[in-house]
Length: 454
Image 1: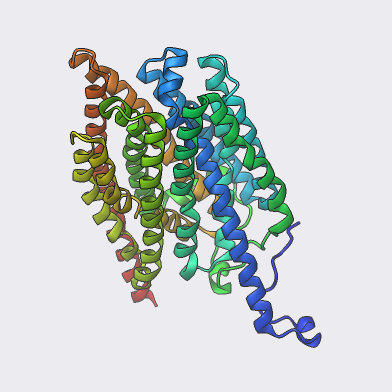
Image 2 (image 1 turned 180 degrees about the horizontal axis):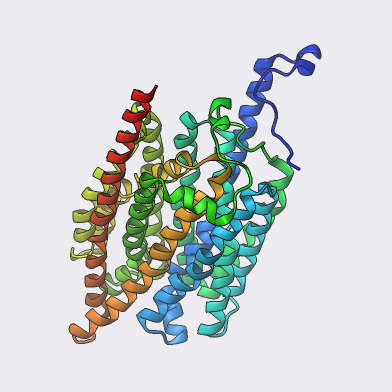
């Protein structure tokens, strides 16, 4: 069923034909690096199409005559409903042996087309349905990509590989902010969405022509695969196995709380800068895009690098730097929304974007490392469902509801209402950090028990 990548071990036929094992190994590494880079690029398109509506919120609000809670539903809930609902069922299919490379190509084409359809919407209802289509198409990409990377890279290299892959998130957000802001400023928000959807169709055609499907569990040691669960597990059996890992549960719960806070804040930052500091779309898109993109990419990469470096001491050591980063980001976010200058707010976002992104790669790597080979796509989907049901779906919506409520308390001042809503959301970062502290203790205990048993 699968088309394996070039072998990573010496092949007798290849050696007889005069092809040294070292050359085969180098070719396999180049091939897996190419796949990883392409997945990272697709992930950036994923987030570009997902997040471009964030910079377009204010003109969409004015065009459709929306309240903040309706705007939060369009940017968060409409996307997150189908993204959340379909993530685990699609991942179940992925774990049962579907060709992940072809599936990723199909999904990439679908969400790109639906992003363009958003630009053709003539009202709230049509835009809502089109955003649901984007969420449905994007639901299967991340579980398939996580599973693919885990089969390309062994555990000791997985955190760094996932760190590079996760860089696609801030890069996609950066490009979406900049392109969306400039195009919408020069033309309109509809054109910006049509432009955003175009590149994905071309990439969807190229990806299956370049990437080959690897063998399941190819990067894991034979001894580890031997102890793994059966390849065919029912949906509920798989969830029960994951639920019996308390460390997995707390990593996922913490990630959901962090995503709730950060997605709520980042979704509304463009509107905050426009309302509170008078920036236009192009200024907001370029400033916020460059800061969040470059600094977010740096923090994401650093989080993956430290996970590989400190993870040699055990999985529990992977989470400590991200925990410190989350705690430090809280007072910085509070300063961002209370300073009196838009330029100062953007400068303060530089450190907050770096330390606030340290958790991204370790969270993905840990969920993959704590899950059996036969369940990695489902483990990824559980993580994504929790983070997106609570984070992507609820974060922007709750922020919008709070913004409307606080604005009423401030005599209808939308800028002050949004400021207070974002201040409330920062507190959830402490909640997420608490889950991660407990998960680290559990992982350390598990590691010590394994050493004693050995």
